[in-house]
Image (cartoon, rainbow, N blue to C red):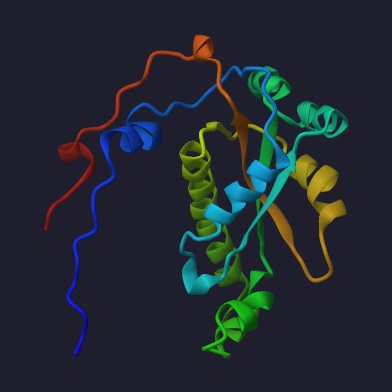
Length: 208
């Protein structure tokens, strides 16, 4: 006999405000460091988010060191340099196109799953991109839940970032590609712009 279903409680308004309604993309940062232990806690939360066949293709490079930041800044679009120079942490959200190598452990109940990606590189690439994007969003929500602010960014030299950072870090068998970047820390509210409008439900949604 199955256990009775219980309705999950809603998060309270303070939590919803923190995660969504009052959350902003920050451009300026307060000079407060982010402890490595907090980044480990951040990843531990982020890693619980679902991915296709539990493939977990995202890889994260947390840039805190001044020398590493100096290597990154010239690879960013001009509008992203000042904000990233101030940020305590810039995360490179990458994807491993060979993520399926780990599926014998991550998806052990289906030993044929990895073969389906190994034999279809286009499928593997699309799956890695889609799911690393999801994992990057999980990272942002986890950061906000832990009291950090976020500043996600496009606008960078992808080939340069891969050459300067990902290729030297790439372990045997990995095929790392950059997806997007995100600054982390404690945002300075003085650097925020007015919140831009969003599409309404009837503009963006259908009920069928």
